[in-house]
Structure formats: structure tokens, C-alpha cells
Image (tube, rainbow, N blue to C red):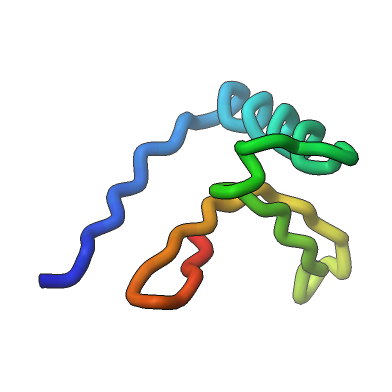
Length: 68
């Protein structure tokens, strides 16, 4: 049986505040143990060209790392 990933994310202002806290924490010189399970993804919007930085979970799954 395959592992099941369940999304349970906050919405609106609560999510924006949590993302900002994680970006600040993970951008520091020593993010601590939280960096074992989280990473910052940097990418550019396809149409807007706007740069984005978003926190994402990193999980070992079947000998590989999965970003969710």
C-alpha cells in the first residue's frame, strides 16, 4: 500500500503569517532542526516573471526525497 499524504493547511492571513515565519527561520544562518524537514523553494512565475520563495515540506519516501 502506498503512503498517503493528507494536506491540512491554514488559509488566508494565518497561512501568509506562517509562511513568512518559516521563510525568516529557514533563511537564517543556522535554521536548526526544522531544516531537516523543511526547505525553501525559489522559482519565477511563468507568466508574471515574479520571483517566489515558498516553504515546503521535505519527506523521505522509498529511498528518495519528496517535496510537498
